[in-house]
Image (cartoon, rainbow, N blue to C red; front, side, top):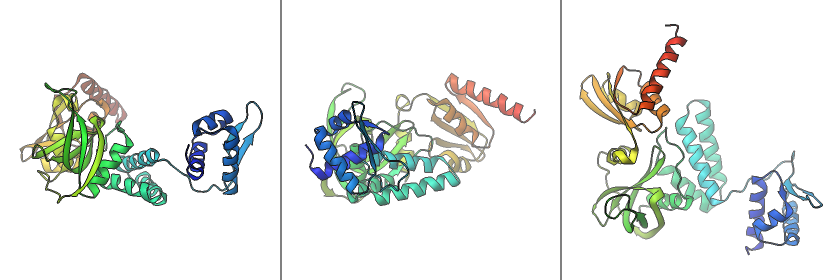
Length: 323
């Protein structure tokens, strides 16, 4: 059983997640008796938290409405989730909404307890986000541990599940110098220098487990090409990133890179033309990526759903323009 102080904070956190908790259910979540639960509720009231109670068979507890509430409390995985979500919103949007996301992110980080604040700030500082990334499924402790190791330039070890080949599914230990966290499509990747293989490698975080720092510091190396996100994307196989979209764009590579290089590979063809390659698993994002280029393009390769979506959007935009 947790000590009284930590249990009280846990109780507050649970009350903040639901409008109403039945007494037996809440006691079960805390692994205490209903009598102990009542005492913990009284402690919260003494601290100024308005906790309403309902007696009887259908009785339970909820935080009172219309009162000035003390600061929220969050658990570690909730703190990491908020930082990821708000950081993503700031990257994806523009104008007042982006400014509000940045402001909210700063407030969330500022009021966290010192240990959680360090982990959240580390995650925000060492992540390169793709604006079109969906929230990847990765354990919060993996994200936080690797983020701290990157921030502190600390060598790390972890267990990694191999993807393909003769060793598919095999669990292997890795010893790395972690450099950057990158999102591509729906996945998180760790870009690191593999000390066993003496080369740069990207690791999918959903295949990574048991991460730990080694307390051994290192001098950060220069990433080939200077761009961690571009290096990770370029190194992914077709099977890893899904169906590819390849288009010939009538615009200089330098101009196109400024607009979409963070989530696509841009290759110059000549001074006025370039080729763009991107992940086509999410049809609307691939179509939107091509649309923001504001330049004529020809699709050379794409999944059928992307081609169909481009056609529908083209007809709809033409009708909207009256042509």
